[in-house]
Image (cartoon, rainbow, N blue to C red; front, side, top):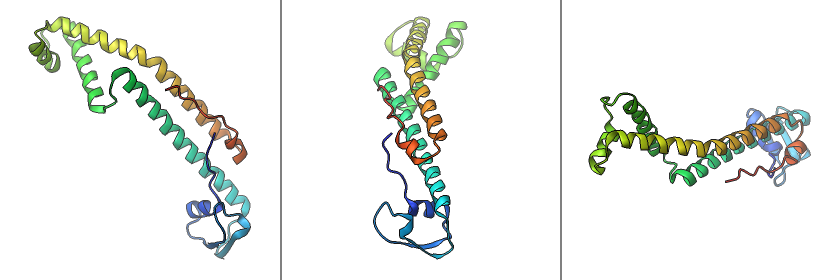
Length: 176
């Protein structure tokens, strides 16, 4: 997996903010180029801190990549990933289920749409239900694949015991 590992200065800033130091040189700053002015942190502890920080960064990136893949596949299948629009589909589906079980139940969205389109309310409810379920069935395998890749990758990241383990992780192909 391609990533830029944190260096000792980043680990100091993140995990030891009270330690005063002066770093000499450019990124990545080697441990030997850090002049501790107040306080001291061992190379072993900082190396451990670098690993924790690298795991955190890769985990965050993996979650973001997985979410982006979900958005891309949702957009590809539904034509949108707008949360309001997706919520509207869910509300409309719930109303369709209620209408199909009780013809006299109120249904704001479906009835309003039927008034404009001139369609039968029950037929429209059945169509909404069928379309929603077809889309969900189309999304399920993609979401399952993405979630599986995310979980496996996060497990591999957490299992790493050294930076070299993180560097050798394969790049994830999200498939979208």
